[in-house]
Image 1 (cartoon, rainbow, N blue to C red):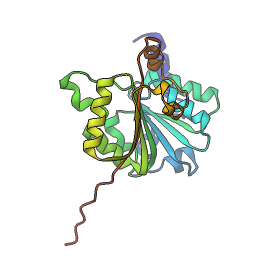
Image 2 (cartoon, helix red, strand yellow):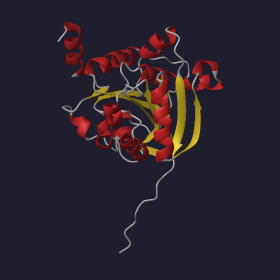
Image 3 (cartoon, rainbow, N blue to C red):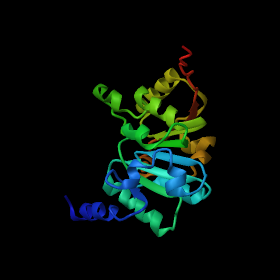
Length: 227
């Protein structure tokens, strides 16, 4: 392992704004983010596959009255976002090293106000369909942790992935959908607050258009046993 990565992994052990499975708080946090970590009642915004946390940190600076959690399985990446948040004195930021599959182990139902999915791996091969972060099995997790009318935001340079996501979302059941396939030329440009991920910088420099959508889920009726 490169020395820089090793140092980042080591430093993560001592950072209070990084939660990993060997830290006691990791197993106590579900349903208790506001009480245990943020110590306030502000809404929680989650970035999935956050990488180096450009959105997590950028949004936290813009919205101090909200709490932000960046989730990624790559410890060396979240270490970068963690450092930036600490340097800027952002107490409304946390990072957690975990897979998206683990959402229901980390967040209670209705605990999240918004979810951002920014430039996920489009998994272009048919064999990767179930790993796409807008596949039905992931949408089921998002619906559970999001509050009523909570928003899901998606940004991607991949038009094929965006089209797949629209089809998947519509089949799952959504409302209040807004979208554009050319974000920077759209009136919706203001909705991403001018924040760019590292991948987004690369794609836009190459002339790629950026696709964006936001929506909320139609709550499915719960089966109630009245026997």
